[in-house]
Length: 363
Ligand code: ADP
Image (cartoon, protein in one colour):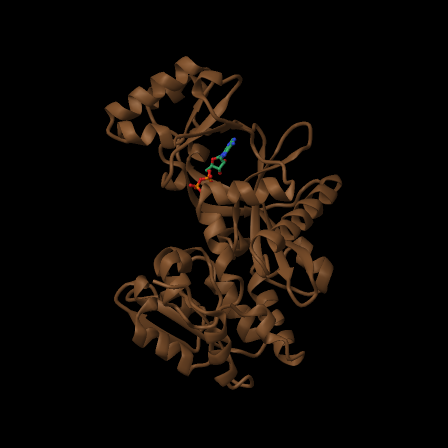
């Protein structure tokens, strides 16, 4: 199926009454602050919700319209898309929206105007593209080990589709790598043909900082709006078990995100933080024009020699933005009043309308 033509989206946007825009997204992930922020900036809001999942949106009173669907993936159905367009909706993408709507559908059949860059979502989803973007932008990432025979020092081994880090493992030698691969095969977690898909990278020992940037297409600036660290099961539970008892548990560590902590980074590291944001946005402009547009997140580990290493990115609003629904230490510095990521997004739409430049930031 062919990709949606940008002109088709702009024609739909052209028909919208700009005085009567709705901000819409799937009721999940990081939508609460998007709805709250949009309402604060004077927009109507609409949540597409799976039956039973509307509770928080109703109870917190942040949505004007709830479009109930049997399953989240129905957001791409023709009738739901029509309802959204009838409301003059601009969709704010987030992790669950991309997962449920599906990348292929977003690229080919979902023609409701969205805030962001449709094309960059794939660069987050495919490990090779993500590495290309980061490497060509000059961002420090974990070194890749191409041959298990050449493992020196500790490495992390990742398999495609191992969401939540289930089935990731750590090894410190080729022998240990081979043993763990064998054990995974025995358990039926991987098949022989999966082995060549193993991605081996340097294990970065450090603390986790997920940095939430907002790239303003209107101002051409990467703002640092907040930071979180992940609270992951089982790894964060395992560290509460005394070391001598950890082996008895016979539990495989996994990294399923169950929540997030707000965090601030050592002030002397902020030049690196801005440098990463500037480099990746410049790189993205060249590789996936127009580049980042709106929220994105660089997931990092900071080592004891104070190097910020990026191990993953989100090319849309990341779940950790929920840590600053009422603004963060950093967003306060820009705006002097509580500013969530969602409100910043709504503000950009508002400015786009005011400056008659909405077409530049809609995809
Ligand atoms: P997923 O996105 O599938 O949940 P991630 O790539 O975010 O998986 O990795 C899960 C966790 O593994 C991260 O939160 C981080 O703590 C850890 N991790 C990932 N890559 C590395 C690495 N190179 N070195 C050390 N820890 C890592």
